[in-house]
Length: 404
Image (tube, rainbow, N blue to C red; front, side, top):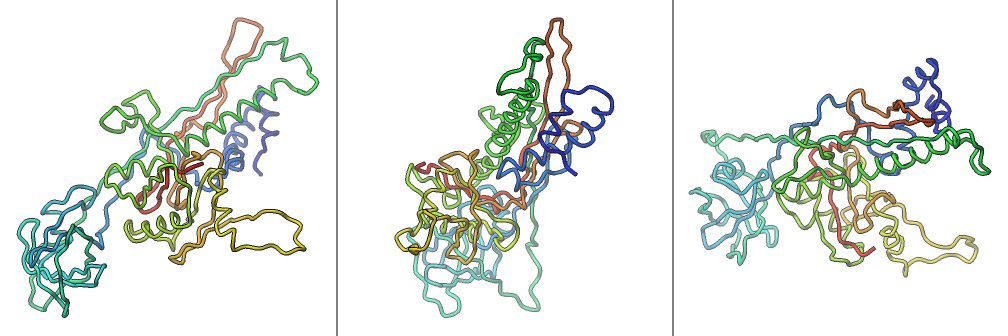
């Protein structure tokens, strides 16, 4: 049975051994549930295992793409863009394109076969009865298949490189003190001054944690993010900071959309879902996909297609409630309105891929600080690590710059 806020406050100021054991065993561990129940987004993000170091690090790899950027001119195709998180190189291109590869241009269905590769340029020919034309600009080509025979040698074997991602920690701390005179004075609207002060302080810490899990950014030294004990600053990464980090690697304005102070539309949400699915290979059939926004932004969603709705004369309620969005690609997304979100930002996120947690042996703690006067002083603190989100490019997209 988890403890509630009132139970937590009853034991907070008691110092006997029984109360201390109960505080450590039940209340400090159960405070997560109290915090999460009072924050919409935090209640959806799982609490992970404790971290034993100042940095939480995990390994990821870029999957094989299904598209590549190239420009066709006569029988020569020049490849460009980025692959596996970095500018295209000969070695990385050969992990995706080999001689015999069949490529298709989505805009008109024209197919070509790669005959020979020389650096980043390949000689190609029309395939499958296609009539091919030159590209005015570099275009995306789908990688369809490869032509093999029983006697073809397995040259240019495939291999994937792996990279590390990491998040750091942040200490949340507050001090609380109360003079003996005020502690023993009864006020008309305050039954217990100590409980009242601590309750207000815990509420502030709860808001601080909610803001940090959503919007905290790691320290940046001007050239890159700095994590761990290389700086005294916070190195925690919030949920909404991940699009900023991933888009600094390979920009995709279709999944990191700047609205330039314009209002949100249905097309914005449809395009974001489509781009996550096609461009970033997001698996929208797996996990818990939600649309998360500020209450000011949710007003626009509630008014989508309002001119097509009607109410009956027998209805006694006023207004419309929209609790999910049905996209044109056939996927439905529940909508979560949270006041701790930035008012100009909306994210589409898979909560199953995200966790946050605490530093080892450093959950919510209280420490009485000895003083020389007639007052009590307490230090309330805990340390959390940032939001760990596996494969962030395929699990979160953002629309920002919205008119709120």
